[in-house]
Image (cartoon, rainbow, N blue to C red; front, side):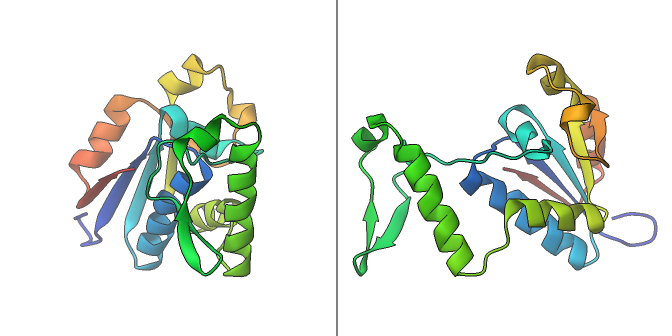
Amino acid sequence: MSEDGTKSMSIIVTKGTLDWAYPPFILSTTAAALGLNVTMFFTFYGLPLLLKNLSLEMSPLGNPAMKMPMAGMHMGMPNIMSMIPFVDSGATAMMKNMMKKKGVASIEELRSLAVESEVRLIACQMTMDLFEYSLDDMIGGIELGGAATYIEVATQSDINLFI
């Protein structure tokens, strides 16, 4: 808790697929709306969520919990199906369509809301270097930091999440 009594939350974001992008942005924007100071630290495969141009996809491969409503029931996709060309694109289109029908905000909308809500967005400098990204590739309003930056934030946070 900060000196003024405000609670804080940190989230380390390590995944960048469409389905894994939702939890950190929903939790961060909700926490910010509830008055918490929120910091998100984007590293490895979570870093592309800060790119100006998002191209999010998802894959049913290795995700037995992914059961989509079809034909009046919930059907999973066998892993072997992921070997077929364009299955990931089809799964991504199905998920985006279902979210649109249900009125779920897009990642772009949630990310903009995070910026508007003054969520602190930190891009991992090592990951930026590793994957050869520059600040020009990223949305505005982000900070650069390393593991020490995240540890400093995490040790002072009331809630720490790893997503």
